[in-house]
Image (cartoon, rainbow, N blue to C red; front, top):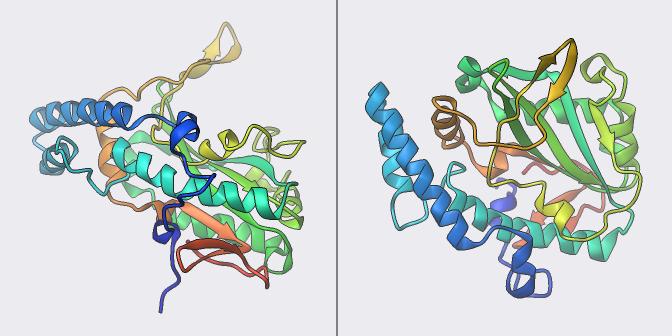
Length: 277
């Protein structure tokens, strides 16, 4: 029997649920619906201009009153956040107050826009897992949850994939141990918070985003400059992103270590062994 994944978590109905006052920590259902309407419109235009049946089909599902089971849908990601975030929040709150947030980047995760269709998130999961194993993660204590994100650079027309995560115990030391290796050689490739998480669940909601954006980054007068705000990915790359997202599941983009999904709940692994999402 295959292991359960994060989308087999039950919807919590306790103080960690993202309803009532806690609902303000994420986008509203109405905002998610309005975003899907915008995406459906953009996909219809893309389909008409490029004669792409895949885009036409996705536009139809995005424009439906029924939430599509797709990473491309803001409504679906709203549901994913409502399911997964409370379980992570509860785990942090009840088991380990010393959890740290981290971000991982690497040049090896930067892809030309034209190659997005070739990117396999499962391969990125396997690659990160292998990096952690080389740091002894099989035998370390604590837990770790990491999820993929990507940002589009409109100056270079490249996608910059990266990871946002939280971790505890010596698994955070394993993340630190990656610093300076050939894959993570730049100063900002590894960023780990110095203090435990505060203002929960905000740092946890950041791990699972309903919107992948674009930032311009390039040289101005010989100095590297980066757009301060995140904007919508321009077309045609936005529609291409939605079609790529539509191919995958939330579990394909997440890595779990030292924890497992069991009977609809997220639990610590007593053996601190790998649990695939």
